[in-house]
Image (cartoon, rainbow, N blue to C red; front, side):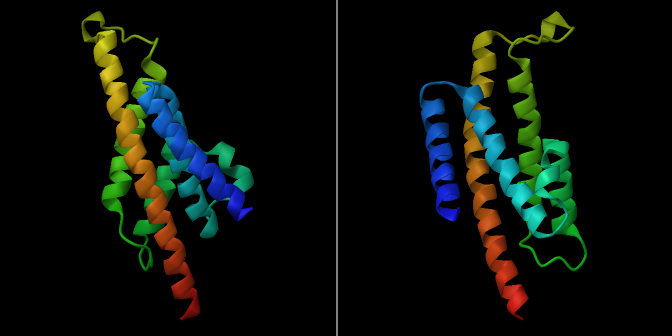
Length: 153
């Protein structure tokens, strides 16, 4: 199972690169959210704050809120990551803007960006999401080591 998960993650990161290189930014953003959500959910599940069967009931925003709560709780042993949590939450807002905004227009017509501007923003969100996907994955790996060390004490 672990080898299969590693294989899937390798494929996911390769797909992000391929999507960005072919300017399929929305595909990259969707894969990035999947990775980030999975890593946060894995962390929360390891702390018994989330059951894998209940994952579908939580929005991306809810997962981020639970992550923040778990890491910042008094006595928490986890590596500080307030900055990373904030970046992920800001990226979530950008993700919503671009994934949902391709064909939805604001009521104020003066605020509608050109398609070129919109795609430039989606490009930025895809590149930022790639960076955050890697950062959250790396953070999660370090927390596994912290938990192992803490449980041995």
